[in-house]
Length: 304
Image (cartoon, rainbow, N blue to C red; front, side, top):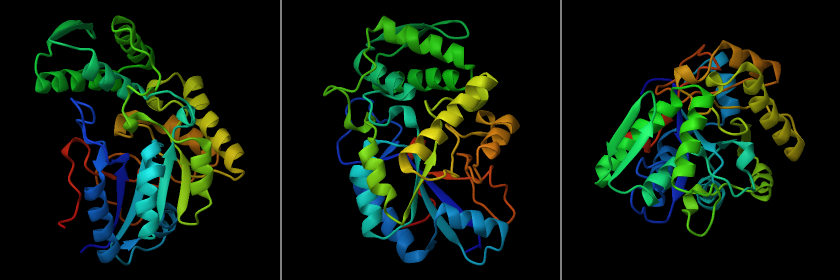
C-alpha cells in the first residue's frame, strides 16, 4: 500500500428503510455497511484525526493513513454514527452547517428530494435555463429529473437557485419545516448534541458554512457572512477557537481564491474539498481530497 492519506467523507448513517426516492443517492449509509467499513479500517489502517492530517501533510507521510469526516450535521451523526465511532475509538471530524442546528429546517437539496418524492406525479414543468416539461411517471425518471434540477441549481448563481427552489415550494405548497411527515434523515443535530460530542477527545467540530450555500456562487459580502457567521457561532457555543472547515458541495467550482483567503483571515488552517482522491506530502491544506463513501455509487475505497 502506498503511503498516503485517504480522507473518507460521510453525510449520514441510517437504520430506517428508504421510501420512494428518499435517500436515492445513498447519502445516508445503512448502519450495517457503515459498521463493516469502520471495523475494516480500524483493523487494517492507522486512523488519524484531521489535526494529524494537517501535521503529516506538512511533514512526512510514512504510512498509509485514513481519516473519517462527516459533513452537514445531521441528527443521525450524533444518534447513530457517533456511537459506532466511539465504540471503535475512531477519531472523527464533524463539519457543521450552523443555520440548521436545533431548527426544524431542511437543507435545500433535501427540500427538492422531499418535493419530488411526495408531490410530483407523472410530469413537471420547470423553467431552468429554458422551459422544460419533464416526464416523472416512473421512479427512475423522477430521479433523473431531480438530478438534473439539482445539478442546475448547484452550477448557477445563488439568486437563480433560490428562484427555482421557491418556485417549486410555492407550486407544491411545500412547508420548509421538519415534521412527523418528513424523514428522520433530514433532521439536524441540536446544540446539546454538539456540546456533548465535542467533549469527547476523539472529536473535532468544524464549520461548513451557515446555510450550506455554495460559497463561490455568492456575492462576496454574502460569502463572507456565510463563513463568519458559522465560525463565530461555533466558537461562541463551544467556547473555543475554530480552525477546521469544509466547503459546502466542495467540488472545484464551489470554492475559489477569495473563499480561501477569507477562511485564512478568520483562523481556518485546514479545509478539505469533496474532490475525489488521496493526499500526499505537501498537499495544499485548502485543496485536500476526500472520498465520498456510498453517495451516488461511490464505492468504499477498500475491499472488505
